Image (cartoon, rainbow, N blue to C red; front, side):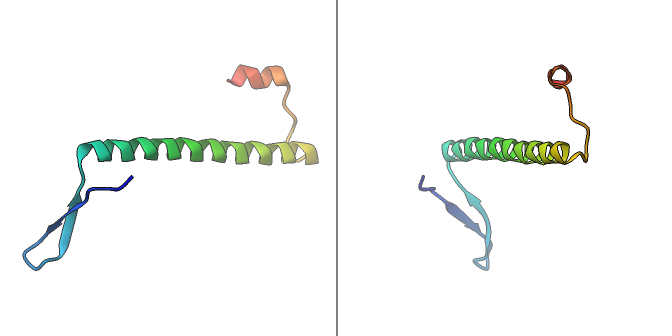
Length: 72
């Protein structure tokens, strides 16, 4: 996506802000939301795999499947 960016400058020519069309802003927010969800899923999976390794090594107690489902 090519953004239609407009720069807002002060009297000295320094950029103070940028403007983009609202449709492009909404598309960016949608993509950001998708990325955040993917990152959350990835983080949850990392934690889960770490916990499995801890269970396999005996560091933490294994959980019964029925108890796992109850937590959902």
